[in-house]
Image (cartoon, rainbow, N blue to C red):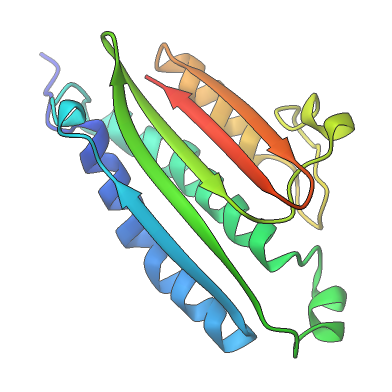
Length: 168
């Protein structure tokens, strides 16, 4: 018997609560990030098992929100951080849930550095990264969303925004 205990809204709240201290800690580096959360009541239905809720939180939402933090900071590696540590940066990460037919949609939008058209086709490829990382986060997010029977897409414009849409 599969125990169903969690809604998409529950998972979003859990991810945001978990990452809030990290987002707040960026202020010590002069990076000020505001998080806007808009949850649709239509996404309150509990249909996720504890295991699937945990996968959605850790493998998908946590990775995407952390990417948004890095995009707002504009920092690609520690060397660049040290060189720019006195520059004040700010941005917004918006997380929104809504229902589309029988599916739950989570949109995460940031106003960070954006992703160029050339790189958009590569963001879900294992090992691809535009900063000093392993390039595993979005690859894992895509594989997890597909495992849960959903889909993930990304739109972006350099210097303006990145929007990730997860449909479960």
